[in-house]
Image (cartoon, rainbow, N blue to C red):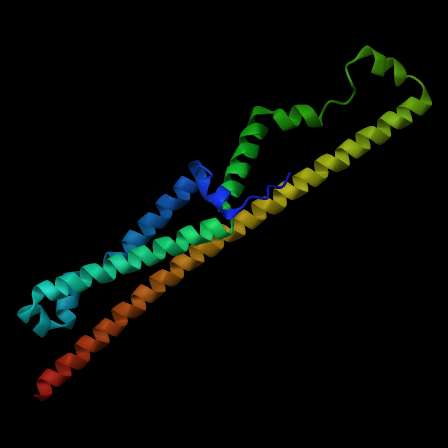
Length: 195
């Protein structure tokens, strides 16, 4: 039961509850990562610029923050699109809902057909063998579907992990930017002392 969709169709797929939750986690993590990128922090790194042209420094802080927000969001959206996560996670949600309602259970655990003709036909050995072969084929088909679903779930889980890692990489880049800013502040302070 695999879906093969173009990236345009994947983008048009409506985001379900799980993707909405993933997006909320991403947004919260991004906001937390960008919180330290403020005018006050930059003014400590560039005190001269903060005193002479604070508007310029405020604009630079705002632009840096917006650039990081934009590129991180684009990267996240691109990962969702390229991996078709919306469709896959929606399919997982649908399968989970159907399983909770017992739709799979009803199909899986019906031991005998309920029509009287089939019950009578199964009363002799050859029809019983045919019925057994049919049931075994049905079982194999269902096992393949379950295996396919497990594979899709594992793939979606792995892709979610990759998205989390990409977010962690963004946070690391922000920390490196912060460290570089602190180094520049230290060098600027030493240069001022040497003047």
